Image (cartoon, rainbow, N blue to C red; front, side):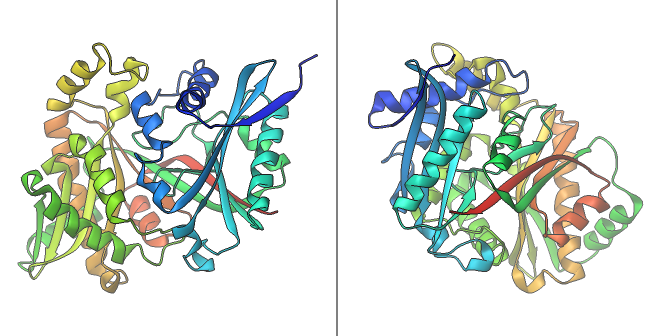
Length: 384
């Protein structure tokens, strides 16, 4: 008979390393799990490194049985998320748990109950989970799509976790979808006609970003993003520190021809960001850049050759979102990046997402491109 479960708080740098190690240990046998880079995983949960801690209170816990780690969880409160309207998921009564791993159902139940208890102790009465740690990182539990690896900046978890969360009394709050497509094929004739029409419109310019002006281009993109996404469920604005943090992490995988800004009459009104699937380039490093992983990755990033390109972000300013121009700009950016992805990077597959289940505009664009939904992530809710 298994011994009792002991749940202890992470209180030191050694504890944080142990917290990360649980992730590796429990997923090592999953052929579709991609080990994250350990330094990044540690930075994510370290105050002073991740600026998320500047507006959030985070507790981390490790579950042990007979002295051996068998699971982990976070219980955290994002005050910026709480400040958002209730119809966007926010509210002063709301907390989160995430970074969930459990070796079996008994451990899973104990960890979820413990996280709920810690949130109740803060006076909170509602949970949205799993969110690890913010909505901009890895939100949701993977429900469909366990049979293939995640792309860069997307999560992957055991299929057994769905039953653990359901048994704990959670219900669906939102579903997040990703869509895949063969980018070696031309888009449907309707899309080609829309793109051609846009190319004849002298008011429209779709340009590449200029990485040598990284800060200026990032400010343009973030300005569009904050306007375009401001009414979306789960939207939390970036702080200045988070912008700098994200820029530092993403700059090595930013390539001019994979990020486009659309201008109308000289005004930037839309953007599309595409990233080569970094997971393909790091899968064989086992999370370590030393002693030779750093050199391997640096060489591979000079001009990456990948199978998959991921579109994590796209936005059109709010005043254009209900117009035909919005979809035209989107299709133009998608087509130009598709061409570059195939010609310059050898990519054959694209992934778009995540997309909220009620974002009919983006879902319509994905369906018009004749994509296939390949993954579903679910964010759950529960009154505690």
